[in-house]
Length: 82
Image 1 (cartoon, rainbow, N blue to C red):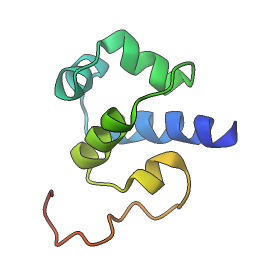
Image 2 (cartoon, rainbow, N blue to C red; image 1 turned 135 degrees about the horizontal axis):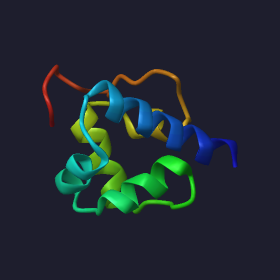
Image 3 (cartoon, helix red, strand yellow; image 1 turned 45 degrees about the vertical axis):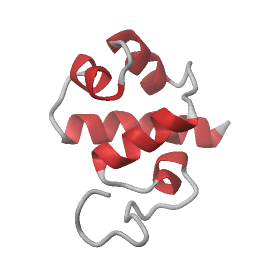
Image 4 (cartoon, rainbow, N blue to C red; image 1 turned 90 degrees about the vertical axis):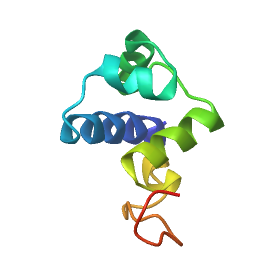
């Protein structure tokens, strides 16, 4: 359960740091702003495909989003988006 809360908090923080709205993020990854809101509240889970899109968009690892590591660095990343 703690990992789910951490995912929600990290997603919200990353979105706010990027200075984009829930609607804008939803448009990027193909979800409604309501769906982004429920992800950030921890009341909805996401698919593998959406998780990867979020990680690519924010240039962080999926492990970071999932709370497996506190290091947001994408392993094997050569400095740009894959």
